[in-house]
Length: 170
Ligand code: PNS
Image 1 (cartoon, protein in one colour):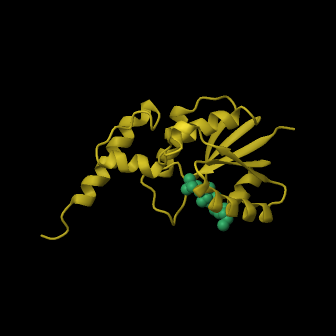
Image 2: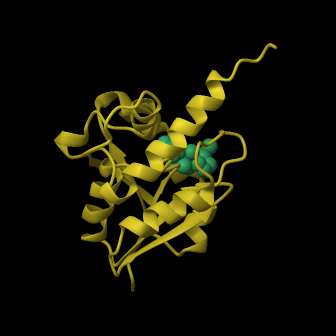
C-alpha cells in the first residue's frame, strides 16, 4: 500500500521554509501531495494558478504532486487516499492553532493523523507574509524564496504596492 501524505497550505507565495518541509516529507512518504488552498474568503496576493505554477517550477521530485483544493482539508485527504497531513511548525506560537486544526481534522477523519515537522532553524522566522512585506518595500528576497521565483514575487508585490499608493481622492 502506497503511503500518501498531504501538505496543505496557502503558499501565497511558496517560501524556502515550505520547500524544506516538502523535501523532508517526500523523503518519508511514498507520495506527497502538496495541496494549495483555493480560498474564496481569504484574499490571496497570487492566484491559485500562480501559486501552483510557482510550486511546479521549483519542486522537481518524482514523488511530489502539486494540486489545488477548495473546501475541507479532510475531503481532499480522502479524495487522494492519504493517511497523513503534514504541517510545519516554526515556533511554539504556531502550535496552539495547529493543534486545534489537527484535533478537528482527526475528529472529522479518524483514519488520518497530522504530523508536525519543525522547520529548519534558518527558516524559523520565515513566512509568506514576511516575504510579501519585504518585497513590498523593495527588500532582497535572497534566501527567502527559491531563486527562480525572486523576480516574479518581487514584481507582483511591487504592483500591489503601487496600487495601494494610488491616491483615492482627486
Ligand atoms: O498556509 P496556511 O494559510 O496556514 O494554510 C492553512 C490551511 C490551508 C492548512 C487551512 O486553512 C485548511 O486546512 N483549510 C481548509 C479548510 C479546513 O479544512 N479547515 C479546518 C477545519 S475548520
